[in-house]
Length: 252
Length: 227
Image 1 (cartoon, chains in turn purple, orange):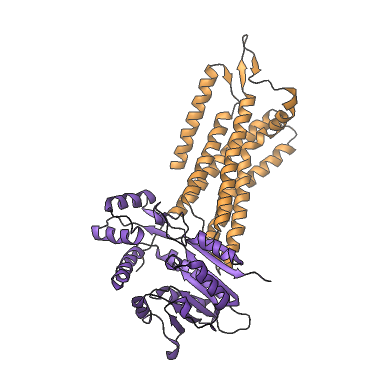
Image 2 (spheres, chains in turn blue, red; image 1 turned 90 degrees about the horizontal axis):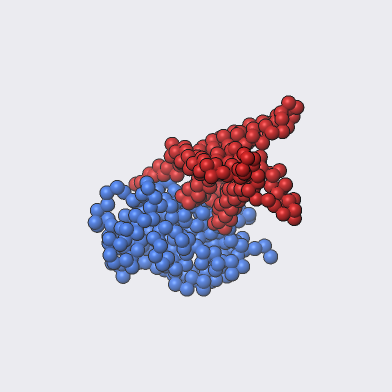
């Protein structure tokens, strides 16, 4: 299992090298904006739960951006099933016992104490890897979402060029939108630019890493290369068009 | 440059078509080749822009709807123009006279008159249509961006620039000219549609080329690799 996460991490890092850094930071800023908008009126501290935070680099950036926008550094809980990623996240986030924001690091949603509520529950490209997502979201909303809180999900749409026309990952933005709506949440959706550029020179090892991350079911490197080129424009760029979904309870 | 070349290609093709028809005894309206080329160019520019661009911050449902409206609108303008050209085309008869290509039944004469009244304005409708589309887009994108805490997003600036530098510079002079033509007591009724057609064609071509260039600039990725 650890080999899988190591390989996944390597492949992801190579892939993210070729993603537009400005777009990515604007995406994180957008998530931070949505989180900041959930700030409780009472003036109490903002609480955020990041589900599937990985090594928490993005989580830390989002918290810093929320701080920049509101003057409040959020109190943080994270859920990360991978032991390797959980070990790494302590390198990026300070725990509350040392004055840092992280108060909770759980390995699963079930492991979150029942009395804990959060103003924002965030998924950053992690819904694809959650089994029984609808049930898990129901638990999160019923038990752990503060009354004025929001579920904030960043996910790819089913028709994103990221999938190269192959069957998409489960729980894409379209499906999550449907689940949140069925749960009675009012969902706002935003399309955000998320561009990827293939370098002019790509080595065989790099192609393999990219294939492992983007199309693990394709075994033939030549077919993968042809697919990638088909989905890129002349400048070797594709916009994956990430969707940001913000689900809030409707006023009853 | 490619946008100008595209238009030149369309004008050459439509003029050739008009000449061939003329040689066979079918006389199309004076400006029909220019007008059809300009509207075809509009459709191509709109297709190219919509195909390659994702508009930041818009909701996916809104984007789908607005794209449908744009393509439907451009298609409708082209269809309307072609219908008018067809109705106004005349056939040469023996003795050098001209007779209408189609003679309409009295029951549809009302529709034909309505189309006739619209004729001078079809070519300028897209100018107002795109101003309206861009204003609606600007309103939606500003609202969405503000919700996420972006008060001056570049998407908003881009749309504002598009309105200021592409839409308004064609719509305002046309509107002023239109008022002038209405108020000018010396203008003959025959000259009015011709003047409108000429000015409309020029403005639409300028607007298409400018919109295409604007869209290309925006598409230029200026990517920065994450460090």
